[in-house]
Length: 147
Image 1 (cartoon, one colour):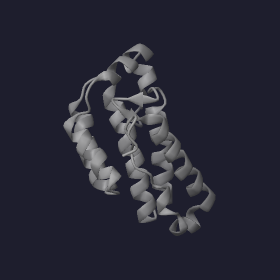
Image 2 (cartoon, rainbow, N blue to C red; image 1 turned 90 degrees about the vertical axis):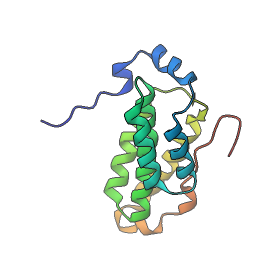
Image 3 (spheres, one colour; image 1 turned 120 degrees about the vertical axis):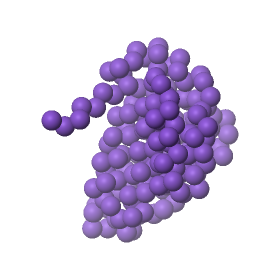
């Protein structure tokens, strides 16, 4: 039997999700975001996974969603079309319930940037993934600070 995914809105109330967004980022999440913003997506995934494993509550799935965007970007750079498509799809589901700004991260911007990258990937298709414009792989921004 395949592993059943229970997304945040199925596990937590919207109030619980919103209230969990006021805390600080896990130290490994901060490292993961720094690595993500450097384009070191595999390493970012490793750090974010440590944060995901260590955190209780709704913030866990937030970290999971971010790390899956990073994995999608990594797959694009490695030419793995199917892997990138799968990770974009999963990331959207993990991040759907979170507010526009969560733990200081401009989540709306991250989702918008990932969606643009996904649309371009789908437009190119598997045969032309090598033509993907790497400038579409945008960093993670913090609220009120573009860097």
